Amino acid sequence: MTHTPDKTKFLEDFNRAVDEFIDRSFAHIIIISHNDADGISCLHIIQNLLYKMNINYDYFIYNRSISWENYLQGILSSRQTDKNAFIFTDVGSNLKELIPIIKNRKEFFFILDHHEVEDDIQFDELPENLFFINPTIYGFDGLEHIAGATLTYMFAKQVKPSIMKQGWLTVIGIAGDSLRPMDRLQSFNREVYEELVHEELIEDKEGLILFGSMHESVKNGLKYSILPFLSRFGGESDQKINSFLNTLQIDPRTKLVDLSESEIQLIQNEADINSFGHYSLLPHKLGLLKFAFEHALLLNILCFKNISAAISIIQLKSITRYAKNLYSEYIDNLSRNLRTLSNEIPHFETKKAIFIEVKGKIPPSNWSDTASFSTVNELFDPSKILFLGGLEIKSGTIKLSVRCSRKYLEKNKTNGINKIISNIKREFGGVGGGHKLAGGIRLSKPSYNLLKNRIDEFI
Ligand SMILES: [Mn+2]
Image (cartoon, rainbow, N blue to C red; front, side, top):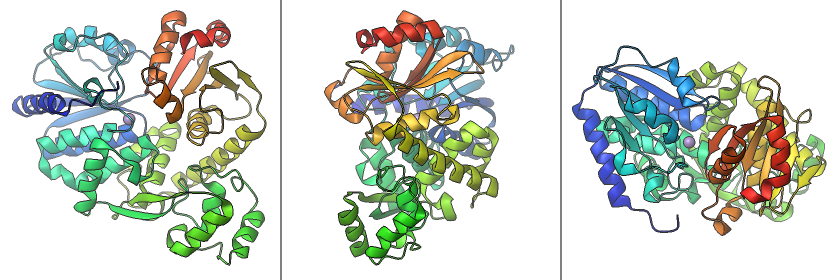
């Protein structure tokens, strides 16, 4: 969509949903959220809201690996009443699957999502018990303008203004989804961010951005930065980085956030990088959890390894040893994977796409993030679509992370990853979905082989 977003219409529909939600004073609510940092932030915002409203609730996490029909079968109760409701956050834009289910239920459904809607849907003919709040259908960009947590925060705050105190949760969602320094935020993300800074619920700082390692020493920052990934230092030996810093007369043990402006200048000049920007701190947290980007990344890691730990750590003030170990291991692997990817792995390349099979070279739990970070760091031709993955043993299917660069999107505005994935699904079946920039698909092995040869038809 290239036209300017219709904010008035969006807020009108948004407010109508909020009013309905308040007026119906539900007896019990089931929250369903996505298994990533944004989704976990949304979950906690809604939990806080329902607690304040004295409404009982249960929650579930959806990882999009099975269809909604199969998933909801285990959740939908045979006892239906319009006194109960569902709130979906950061998930629920697969309307083709959901509408037939929702139409036959008595409960009310509030879907707060920022993923693109791939299906052909008449939005004025939705079931009466469905409130579908998705800014992308009004022309907003689900990645650049509004995170799931931003939308969820706006909803919760409209219902109960005192939810602002939990607004820091929003910044975790924004940091996890946007992968951007905070000075690059736009639209609702920016409005909410500035409000939270103004209310001193979060702190906005500027400095050398080495995301993934903002809580570290400058030596570790250069070594383990994943955004930007510094090919000169990433995964290199301590000795090499120390000697670089020593020639600049900078103590390698200096905390990254304590570097002076002139030291930052010096590093940028000598290393030929340009990475000055804004980052966000959560004032009531300590150590790694104080840094919004790193906190979000930790949640994303835990969502894969141990979902309960992800759900509980967002409430903690300081990190557990267990989580810290997982984090260091992850960053260590990711910087190594990015190094591997930028050097050796063979590619299958067509005019419009690059396929990289990483099975055996990169563990499956790292595929998605390695794909994301190799794309944002432009390790491959940014004018091509990246398919990174391989055989997933437990499902026997080929699991692919699909990514494009922002540059690609600027040139191909209407043909994002979600669109490409739905084109592929229409031809080959499979399960998957996503944003304009990022998505995933699982395919059978034969379908995958066909796809590799015919990919340019679908892009
Ligand atoms: Mn999201």
